[in-house]
Image (tube, rainbow, N blue to C red; front, top):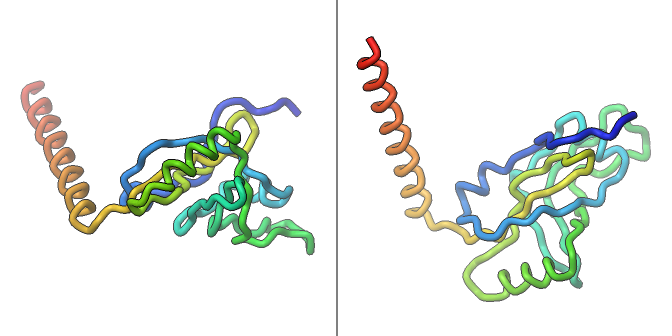
Length: 160
C-alpha cells in the first residue's frame, strides 16, 4: 500500500486557544500502539483536558483521550494512558527554559494529525489567560465578525 501524503487533521483543542495565550509552537511525534493508530485513523480523539509535562528530559502527553479501538481484542490500549512525545534534545531544553521562568506557563497540545502517514502532535507553550483576557478576546472576535458582516452587507447592496 503506498504511503499517504499530506496532512489529515484528527483533533483540535479549541478550548486551549480560548484559555491560553499561545507562545512558541512545536511539532512532535507521538509513540502509539497499533490500536491507538487505528482509532486515530477512524478520527477518534479528544484533547479537551490534555496537557504535556517534562519528566527526566522526556516529554509526555497526559489526559489525551484516544478511545479504545472498536474492533480491538483483549490487547486493546487504555484510552487515557500517558504517551511519550518525540522531540530533539535541544527542543526539550528550549521548552524547559520557557516553562522554567515563573508566569503560569504550561505545555498545551493544540492538535493531533497525520503528516505523511505519521501521527504528530502540535504542542505550544501557553500562558493562562485571566477572566478579563478571555472576555477581551471574545469582544474582539465579535467586533471583527460584526465588521465583516457590515462590509459584506455594503458590498451586496452596491452590487445590485
